[in-house]
Length: 200
Image (cartoon, rainbow, N blue to C red; front, side, top):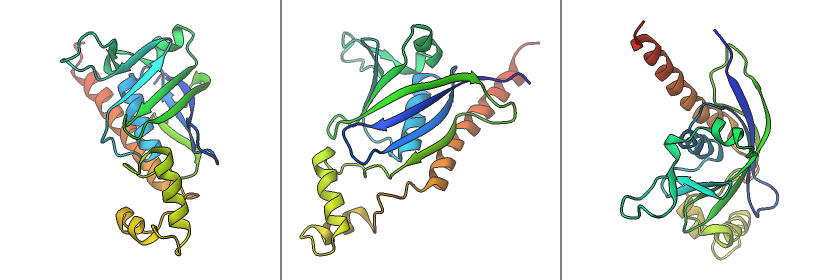
């Protein structure tokens, strides 16, 4: 079995200190739609909102048929390798146009993958991502302050809204690994089915 070419990507949620980041290994044959799924899984998002990538003065996402002239290319039709071949080494990924979560995705390395590993793969990361619909950066700052201080006037309301305690240091690595691995398992199953059904 030949090894795949793998891109190691570093994902940072912009404008937040301390930095919330993830490192993932992604096949260069992955579409930008799959990269979206990987970012969602790695960052702990719920995939509830609109999203798009920006790279090399182009936007990639889910085109709206009502707006055919929006300039949005279909992410499912564009492979990561095509961007790398154009010399692109950094993408901007925006999720939830209301909360406006912007992520910078930087290419760290490209090389052969390990033959017995199913990709994509979660490698490392630090700090838990914001909850969905928390209200963007200002809402997240209020949320962090309130959750850390039982005397804060918003503590009880936000604890009820979130559904329990929130530890910004804990990314729940086991859950994150499993979420990214689920994409790898689906991808591997799809590859096997394709090979099985391909004319000999």
